[in-house]
Length: 503
Image 1 (cartoon, helix red, strand yellow):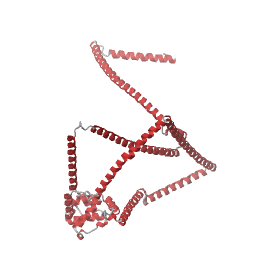
Image 2 (image 1 turned 120 degrees about the vertical axis):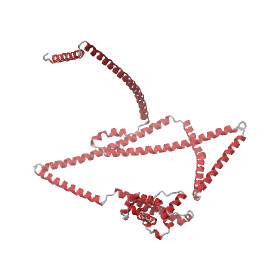
Image 3 (image 1 turned 135 degrees about the vertical axis):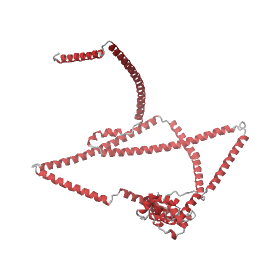
Image 4 (image 1 turned 90 degrees about the vertical axis):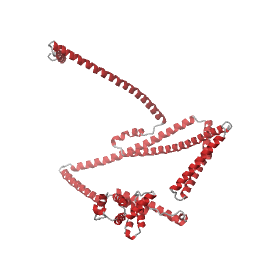
C-alpha cells in the first residue's frame, strides 16, 4: 500500500518528492493536507489549506467527497465517530486506505467528481416545496439534470465512436499512397495496351461488357424484389386462409344457444371482475399508497423506533392469537351449524378469487403473446426483405422455396408435425432398445471369442509339447505353411487358366 501511494504521489499531476521513509514519517496534519490535495486534483473546490478552516469543516468536506466517490464510510454511529476522529487527527490507519482507493481509480473518480457537480440534486425540505415558485424551480432543476445526463451520454458516445486527428491523417496518407499505386498501375496498363493494335476495340468491348453486367445486375435486383413481393403476398394469402379456416371451424361449432351461453359466462366473469375483484384491488392499492405516504411523511426512523414498532407488532399478534383461542374454546362446534357452511362459502370465494386472478393473468399473457407474434411477423418480413436484397445470382432461383420455408406453420401442419415427432420418438426408443440388446450380445460374443482363443492357446501349447517329445518340433506349423502355399499356387493356376495364360 505504502509503495503504491508513494509512486502515485511522485508521478504527475502531484509531482511530490517523497520516498517510503519520508512519507511514512510525515506529521498527521501534513498527511491530512496531502489527502485534501488529492481531493483537490479530483475536484478544484477541495484545493484548500486545512490550516485556514476548522477541523470540523475539513472532516465534513472530506466525508461529502467520499460519499460522492462511494467510499465505504462506516454507518454505525460508534465506528463513524471513530472514523471522523481519525480524520481530524490525521491517523494513518484511516488516511492510507482512502489515499490508496482514490489513487487507484483516479481517472474514474475525477470523472465522477465532474458529474457530481451537475447531477447532485439540491436538498429542500418538504415544507418549502409547497411554495409554487420553489416547486416550479425545483422541477426545472430536475429537468436540467436529465438534459445534462442525455447530453453527456451523447458526448461519450461521440468520443468513443469518433476518429482522432492522427487516425484521420493516417487514413488520408494511406489513401494517397493507394491512389499513387493505382495511378502507376493505370499508366503501366496503358503502355501495355499501346503495344496491341486492337486495344481500342478491346476497350470498347470491355465497356459494353461492363454496361451489360450493370444492366443484368439491375434486372436481377428487380427480379428479386418481385420475388420478395410474391413471397409477401403468398404469406398474406396463407394467413388469410388460416383465418378463414378458423372462422369456418368456429362457425361450424357456433349456434345461437352456445353464443348466448358464452356471452352470459363472459358477462358474469366481467361483472364479477368489475364489481367485486377490482374494487377490492383498488381499495388495497389505496391503502398501500396511504401507508407509503404515511411512511414518506414520517421523519427518519431510528433503530430504536423500529424496534419499538416490532415489539408492538409482536404484542398485537399475541393478543390476536389469544382472542382466537378464546373464541375457539368458547364456541361449541356442534351448536355452530352455520360454521361449516360459512367455511365452505369462504373456500368457494377464495377459489373464485384465485380463478379470476388466473383468468386475468391468462388474458394478459394472451395479449403479450399476440404482441410477440405480431413483432415476430414484422421481423420475419423485414428479414426476408433484407435477405432478398442481398441474395446473389446463384441463389435467386430458390427464392420462392426459401420464402415458403419461412412461413409460419398452420395448426394442421403443426399437428401433423407433432404426430410425426411422436412416431419418430417411438421408433427411436425401439431402435435404442435393439441397440442395447445388440451391444449386450456383442459383449457376450466377445467374451466367447476370448475363451476360445484361450482354449486354442492351451491346445497349441499341448501340441508343441507332444511334437517336442516325439522329436518333430514345428511339424504343425510347417504343414500349415505348406497347405497355405499350395492353396495360393492353386488359386494362381486358376487365374492363369481363366486369363488364357500358361499354367
